[in-house]
Image (cartoon, rainbow, N blue to C red; front, top):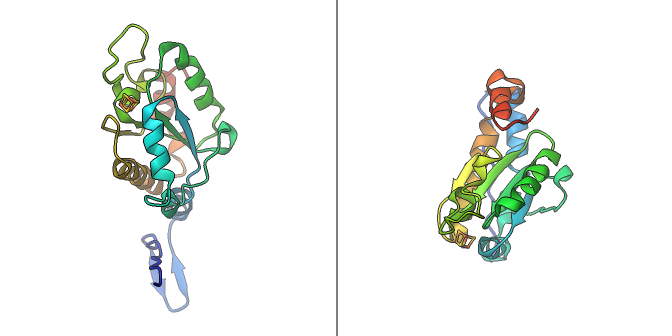
Length: 181
Ligand code: SF4
């Protein structure tokens, strides 16, 4: 059986005989969104669900995001999955800080997003208390389809992001609100 391979859509632009023009931001966004390098920061059961998403059936490689790495220097998508204890908070923030810009954050599951069922003194009630989050995936645990939906939401953000956004006053204010220089 022949596999069906789709091409990604070209960005908006002007075309004519032998030429095509578009914005630099759109070309960079197209490349970035189809080559995300995730860093899986998995501490508990949601991580197992992510492993299923990596498997042949759901195949996250179809989204160009199968190149995982555990070194923050190489990654641009921090995927936080599982319960984050308050003691783990500074380590998570350090990992985030070691990632170079542009970087995006995905909170997978109820625990990473809000503390989940662990409304206790020792558990961080959502990672957005210490780092900015771009996309939240609901569920306990989210199904692999939910994880893929989250990846596609990140892709949409990445594809539409201006290459100048990280230099904007608004972005600097966001970083300052997290005490990040
Ligand atoms: S959200 Fe549910 S499945 Fe995910 S880490 Fe928390 S308890 Fe486990």
